[in-house]
Image (cartoon, rainbow over all chains, first blue to last red; front, side, top):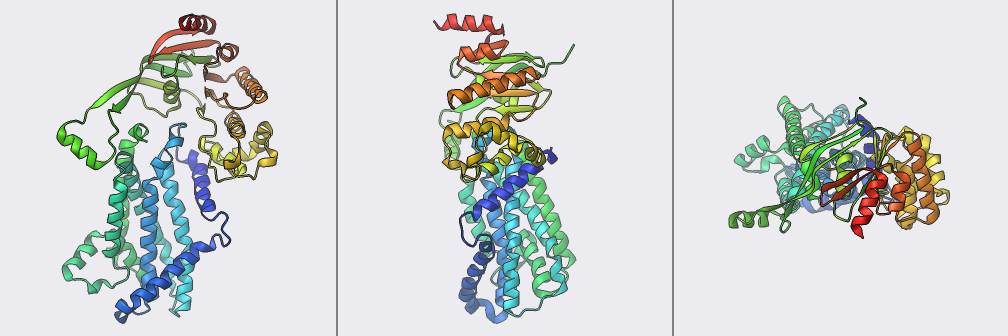
Length: 253
Length: 245
């Protein structure tokens, strides 16, 4: 079933990527330039506040911000994927998960392109590149699986309650501030630290990613296994909710 | 006995017609508290049975809102039965709306691939049939034009040509030939006739009784979601014509 529609997924992903930069002069370069510009602004703003105790603040910031951006854009787009394709789903039979899946996947492609920007920042700031950096795809896979799961859940919820879009906006904002993206986790009160380390999945991915790219070390077993387990739990929850409700979608879109 | 290629058995399709649409939490909570959350049940189809053998061509006739399109959607798998069952043994090409899945910002060339894969074909299959599709649609000069600049007739041509390029077992056609000029309509009719001769099974909705009797050998007359009459196309069309006088 999945195999039959693999070419459709490829078409949808390439459509998203093609259309994103159609008629723009610099095209795909924006996938690198855009995060770079945002980064420069954020570095200027935040370095005054936090950089005293963080070495090479731009790379620290970037490694966290990249993952958060992928999570928030991909899940947000996945959320509207079923509703936005309502017209099509009413007129022809296509498995509904295809749209959610392809939406998260095209964001993932964009995310991988933004590694170019990270490389530029690393070189420009004179940080040393360690061999552990080549292991970054393991983090990409984990967060991709996690976002797929969350995306499926949100897509299903959004069919029945459009309010979820606004609620989720507030959630992502809170999520950003509750993840050590532009501050070191040590600067938080002890209780909050424990809470974040235990419950915030994004913390696991950011910590692993920073270990590999920023500190140049292999992540510890706790965050490594925690990351994988959370990803798969989220995927199972998302798929379960989606599958349970998908036959009713058509009546609400 | 040969199994039916499309077997619709006592099909009932139900919609929840909420008096107003409740699709946000606040309203839902208010209604829940005020106990106003009741659904009006609407049965778009009731106990409809339709058995089609391979190679037959069936027309669905009836006035607007009688459930014709709902039946087509149920056969295509878009709507799930509330009661009863729908079994289809074979590949379906649904033409419920031409060019469903076209993206206005993409060129005709890209849309041919997109639409083809929406219908479940592989990229390779589309590569092989690409020339044929463009030939039939007569759109060689506009291949790299974004489809939002196409006229509705051009879009319909492209959609029809993508959808019928397939050698599918069941072709489902829902009142789509209303657009398009006289020549194209004739071309479409010819194409459908060829497919019928090749053994494709046809399910056809049209208000044009002339088209119906030319293409189909059986007909099902639906009225308010129930079967009014089924059988030979001439008998049913005659009865339908007399009824509407």
